[in-house]
Image 1: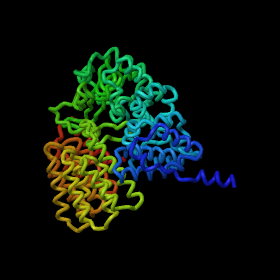
Image 2: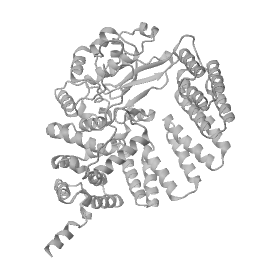
Image 3: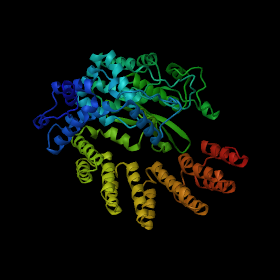
Length: 590
């Protein structure tokens, strides 16, 4: 009987008294949760905390976030290790951010993720409401949960006192260092022997930056920055010795750090000789300064020097009228991102592409806008995030009416919350098969994100798809043309993306004759005056699509038509690449 009573006690569901939900979880409550989980597993705690979070939300408690994030920690720590790996691999494949530097296989192991985090760190994580909010707001499906937790454990174990003061720095390191960087990072114009693409040990770089900041030796106060910006500080391709050199030899401060780009003498002779890959014996910052370089070396030098001085920086690459270019951005003394350092306005370079070190994929155009505007720190946005979270919880349990209500509340609180719109659309689809309400929500979203063109285009494309499903083909075609024309003048990159999407859709659905007609129409309407970016995204995919289908004469005609339409200057990069593509087609090379 005694054995049976012990078993029944162990199986009791955790219940949080209603009166307790009206205040923040106490240290004693958190310690009790951790201790119970140590003996019975976090799986015994998670359902009770979920119920508590829902009750707090439905009763309007002022401490909903605190209880919600306890629920999220319990759910995460209760996740079986093997399941976490499977979900992560699926997310990486779906996002297409896998790369050759990642492991080819991941071994499974028994137990849950809680085994990666000791009691002291569990108390530190669950007891820090601000860190919990930062953690779950930042965490991406392509972050590896086992590695993120293991890195946090390593940092906490080696520097427990610094961890308390620099939790956001630790989090930024964890979400960047969980996966090795790809072979093309930070750029592809230097070989791996000179730049191995290896991140430093996470606990060492944490201690390095935390101690620099405590000694007031960083230009930004790192303790004040969110993890979402600190991740652009800790994405380091160099050892600490390089950082020390840059701190001593690069004199620029926050007010004039853009000038660090011009410290590197531009080597026109390399361009004339087509030496786009670094030709030196090493790729140390001192060597780049001594020898000079091309734009990508200038951007690499400046962005790395900024990180050495405690400044988050971003390296950009883009296309202009004369060819490809690279520049950088940094967080200045007014806490504003300067994103055009070394970007030559007279060359009309379009929006650049940058690597997100958290995912190792290209960072979204709108994400850069979100970072620079910093609205995620606003109370209204945080409230919107909470409504979004509970909309997702209701969807999980099949309560579509409550999900719709919570999602609608989320977008009403802050219309810049992208996740809120997505969950609203998901709830709308789950509630009814009728496409008209979905069309109405998509039109709302298009208006909400007019300031963020890539999002406006993204929702507009969904709207076009819904219109086609409803048989409104004329309206769908009108919407496509509207998008192409809207951004042709001042956002050529987005106009090109829309043109590319139209051609891609035709390639996937139309007969060959129609595909060629669509390509020619897009080339005639969107191509005049365009250069290498249009060529990369519209012309090359279509030409190679035709060649792959044994339509080489048509491919050559399409390429020739592009040469007559685009802005092609003799002897420039686009002219040379078109000539090389023509030669490949005629010789049958892949």
